[in-house]
Image 1 (tube, rainbow, N blue to C red):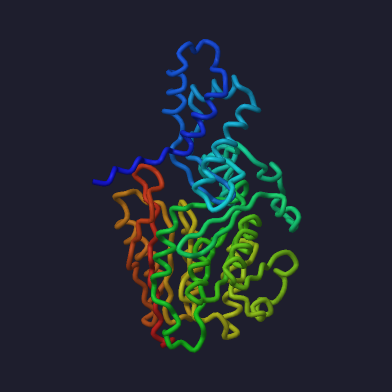
Image 2 (tube, rainbow, N blue to C red):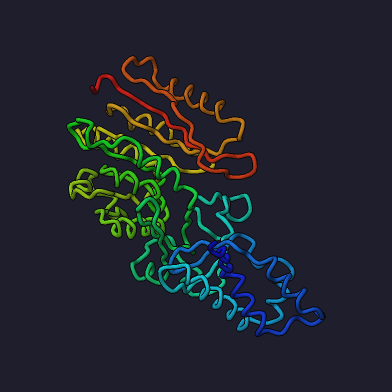
Amino acid sequence: MPKPKTPKANPIQTAIQTWVASVRQPDGDEDHKVWQDGLLNSAPKRFTIYEPMALLPSGSFTNETWTTTLESVGQDSSAQLWSLILKELSTQAKGVLSHLAANEGIPLHKNGVKDENVLRSPSGLRILYGDFGPAQATTEAMSEADFDKALWVSTKQNGILQTWAPRWTMFSRGNIKEKARLLDMESPSGSGLCEKPWAVDLYAGIGYFVFSYARLGMRVLCWEINPWSVEGLRRGARANRWSVRIVQGHELELPVEEILAGGDQIIVFLESNEDALGRIQSLQAQGMVREIRHINCGFLPTSEPTWRHTWEMSAPSTETWLHLHENVGVNDTETRRQAIQHRFEGWRDGSAERTVKAEHVELVKTFAPGVWHCVFDVHVTNSSCQ
């Protein structure tokens, strides 16, 4: 009989064991083994690689045993530990890892509860090793040199590359399921429409869902207010070989039809999505962007402020899928679906030509205990356009 395979040692545990052998235990710890076991047992075992960075779970190395030890040994010895961890984790990566951080989540507010964190800045990211770029950076008039000073990382999901600066923008790997679902939706290529369908993303971020629409062959109009996210979207689009245009500064004053004339597959407006409806209706009045197949509203805890605008944008289209992201109590999804149906029915204003149905609720992932991140798919059709 073949010998059973010996399970591989956890790379973080291996690094810690090597490091512990080279450091002096804190004063008062008479039992070296007890101290070492305490470090090993409370150390993180999971990790995620976004080359060239390794990201550890929230709370890593923050319990009393670790904080006391790291304070006792000093910065140089602590840096040696992080370096050893990166060395071991590099055996799991395609290349050498050079940066280490712990993920402390994306706070919904800044300065306590007063200012909403609409940029979704990962201010809780705990940097352990490596140069992640300047600790302070403006979000206005960013130059290429400013962006180049930051660390940029990447990963591939569903065969699509995504890029971001972890110090300044978020990345939620849990959205992979929703990205794949969009890719599995019927391709517009065989729809028989005279005009190539469009998609609209009102909260584009680094291109989470934008890239799924681009992969389906659609042209995409995007809105995003975080310049770091826009730069990540630009880099990611080019890495995936999609043409992209960033509209910002004085270019925002150009006629919107002139902006689209270049034929870029992805057009990103660095401005509030409050301006999206006016721009799109201007194009529709000229007979452009009439067939919008998807409109994505991917903002939590609710994307509700944009819903009426999505209804207006979809008016000239034969059919449009609205994807409304919401945080909903685990037992409240059907109640919320009915409320959304009622809301959109009220906007029909007696029209017999347009129909609307909140057809599907997708449970993407748990957001908090008892709370789901959901996507409500609302199907809008217009019989007068057929």
